[in-house]
Image 1 (cartoon, rainbow, N blue to C red):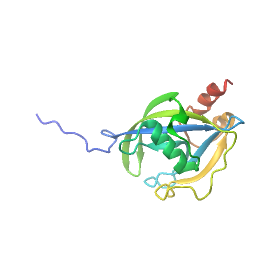
Image 2: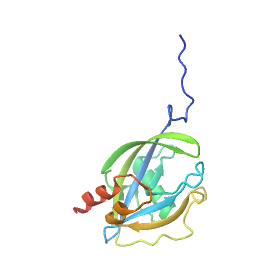
Image 3: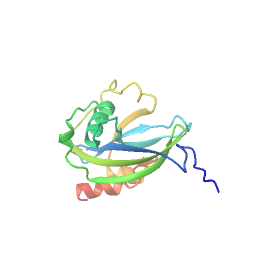
Length: 161
């Protein structure tokens, strides 16, 4: 009897990946989200938290700080992020490949932040289309896809609402 293994990068055998994410909160209690799309699924659009995968040798906090700068222009030291407040594992497709991503979320509070329009890294310009500050109520009532899906409730818990 032979055992066959599904090809890597499929729903049955996703590529393992780790990521650091940041809930960037302003003084009004809003979170900065990024609007993007999956090039492998034309017409897909969704909002997500700042962050992304680890580069070789990076810690989760280093990746989160690097991604924060690359996606928003805000530079912080990894230690400024403190300890992660949440860990989760998600399985998702991107550009035709499936990933199983373990991700840690950090909270960073700022009085305000305006994202420079020319800040995106060249490899991110093709999938990041917009930035926007969102309240928990706006997230809860939008018809648009927002990830993580429980972000409105998570934001309310963080803010004590």
